[in-house]
Image (cartoon, rainbow, N blue to C red):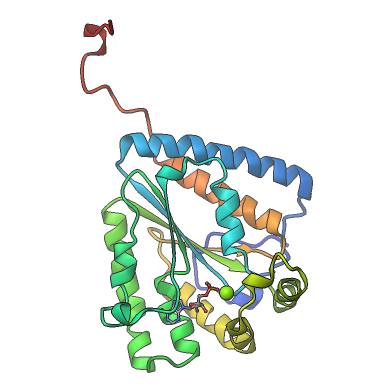
Length: 264
Ligand code: AMP
Ligand code: MG
């Protein structure tokens, strides 16, 4: 059964299968993804040369859903100078003293760059809601504020691409167990992962609402089936390439008449 990636109407998360992979084969898809990632590298050079737009990749998902792995793969062939990656953790006292979008806005990528948000302003309607860190009145009013903020981004040529990396509860169990078993992954294990996992259902409901409340053609959500890392990477790479291609970026015209100059 096919399922949409780019969301265009109201959804129920239970209709989306985290195992989905279009019946594609792993190896061929990985090769295709490599080509797509190389294309991201080429297109980023044009983006940088023009400095007219920025692309902002927003990665959300439960712990172990692959926010880090996706970033690593997607940007494999990109000049690091043209990339700004930001992690949003539990807010500091300084951040809490400001409005919830303050730290987000500061991390906005400059035009010419690709920005990646590992978590984002969506945490303020997800974890804040599930753990009751703020009353409903506070987080409930944030959907509208997020929509307004994302409109500001788009009007200023910062193009948001929002990805929900959708894994199943069983897949998370496997990945958390690997964090416990594999000495090279022990450092990733965090006790808070278990606390969040205990709230799985509430997080799914919060994600569903965030996707439905904050989806528009200008700032669309993508629900990425993420149980298979290779398919997840393929979908994200394809979406980013399409968004960059849509900008039809040419090499900028020379600022001077280049034929008039000879370098001695
Ligand atoms: P990690 O991304 O696994 O390193 O963990 C970062 C933690 O920070 C996650 O548990 C997030 O839920 C939490 N976090 C991020 N943003 C916020 C926020 N605005 N309020 C509360 N917790 C947050
Ligand atoms: Mg974590």
